[in-house]
Amino acid sequence: MLRFNLLRHPHRRLVLLALCLTAGCAGYRSGSRSLYAPDVATIFVPMVESDSFRRDLGERLTEALVKEIELKTPYKVINSPNADSVLEVRLRSDRRSVQAEDQFDNPRVFTGELRAEVTWLNRRRLPLGPVQVLPLPEGFTGTALPTSAIGVGQSTPLIPESGQTVASQQQLAIARLAEQIVGVMEEPW
Image (cartoon, rainbow, N blue to C red; front, side, top):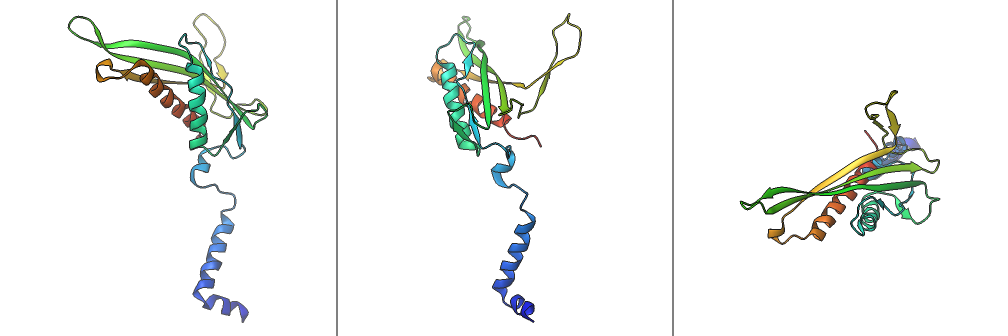
């Protein structure tokens, strides 16, 4: 008799329905947390190593990465190698090429390109991100080598006539590269 009295009140029905629905969803993740690894709470981002001869690119990319991780992921960036995971990035190339010239062969539009190698490892030094297979160079025998490093790149235009500077073009490329690296940290579907 008591059971039927509980169901007669509309508010109690809603509470009972909500309890039933949420009880079945205990193991599911929703929202942006479902895009990222559930066993990672903290991440360590060491200073980005740069093979470029341009100054401060590694430092600027490290700063952009930390900001992007804090902004778009549920992870907390800490300054300790004892974090749940380590995101290692190496800036492999920084190139600028001419895309358009005027009638006197003066360069008018450039394209700047940044390429980085990203490795995301957990505390046991196992890769968290997707593993790529890199082919061996010609002349070697054997099979392709699996690696946990992921190559990402970003190219941005530089148009000096529009008032754009090399520094602003580089900062735009760094910001976009940081977005791509954080995008790599999402779990594959």
